Amino acid sequence: MDGKDVLCWYAVYVRSRFEKKVHQLFQDKGITSFLPLVETWRQWSDRRKKVSMPLFKGYVFVRIVYKSDHLKVLESDGVVKFVGIRNVPSVILDRDIEWIKILTGEPDALRDVFPEIPTGQRVKVISGPFRGLEGIVKKEGRDAKLVVYFDSIMQGIEVLINPEFLQPLKNA
Image (cartoon, rainbow, N blue to C red; front, side, top):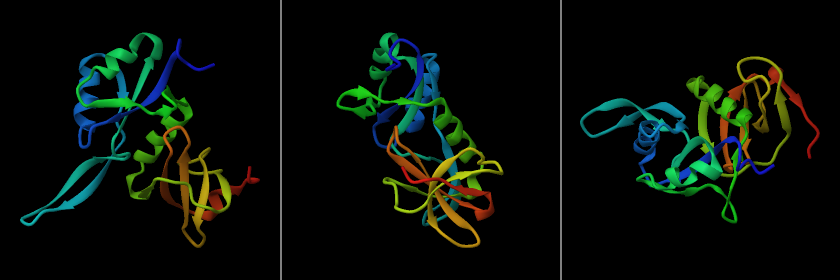
């Protein structure tokens, strides 16, 4: 099933620094959208301020029936294209959107965003707020660094996690 006739999540690539504007445009048009934000400190010459920044720069997620709603998305100011392979938009699993929501609900655990998956042991989180997530261990130690990778948008997020919460998986 390619998801073109059913309600699915898709990632939309937007102009640089247009994530919040596009997200608001989608809401104004009645399009269900999701923009994961994380709070971070920004330093200017005269002040320091806490600001909300997009977790994935250049991406906004939309939940639409592609066949009937894709033009309404593409015609929105700031939208560049749907994220996909060979002009076929990639369906984002509901599970992946839920994981992103969990990750952004735990901003102190977020460290960095990685554009490609690192090598290492594949694991599943068996306890705590990230239970059910699968990823790759990036660093061993008292606080393991786990990279959760979302194939559909080719992005990963690094989180600190207690190794006791991890269960090794067979490498695929």
